[in-house]
Image (cartoon, rainbow, N blue to C red; front, side, top):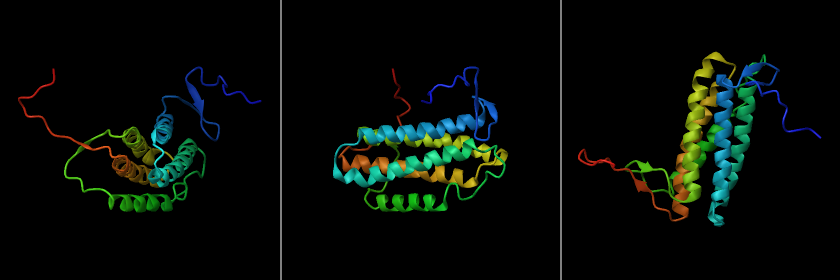
Length: 193
C-alpha cells in the first residue's frame, strides 16, 4: 500500500513533475495551490446545491470544470519539463464552451444595473467564493506566462472561468429564489461602528 505521507516536504520543499525540487513558496507552487483551492471551492459549491432538477446541468458543467482544473494544475506543475508548453493543454474548446454556457445563462438572467454583493443561496455563495479564488489563480498565472513554460491559454481559461462562475452563481441564486443584494455606496455621513 502506498502511504499518503512521504515526509519529503517536511523541510519546506516539494517536487514538480520532472523531478525538480522547489520551495513551497515558489510562485509555481503558489499558483498550483490557487488552482487547487478553486477546484475545492467548486466541490464545496456542489455539496451545497439543493436537489432541484433545474440545477443538474450546472452540476454536470462544474464537474467538467473540476476535471479541467486538474489538467491545468498538472500543466503548471510540469512547467520545468522540457517541451512542456503545448497550446492544446488548455484546449481552446474549453474556453469556447465556457463562453457558450455564459451566453446561454445570461439569457435567463435580468440585466445587471448595479454591483451585487456575493451571497444568496449556499450554492450560489460558494460559487462566488470559487470565482474570487479563480481570480487569485489568474493573478498568479499572469506573471508566470513570461517566465515559465506555461501556455498563455491558461490565463485565458482562468479569465473566462471567473466570468462563468459569476454568471452561474447568479443563475443558481435565481433558480433557488435567492435574491441578489445590490451594493449601494454609503453616504459620506454614514459610518460603521
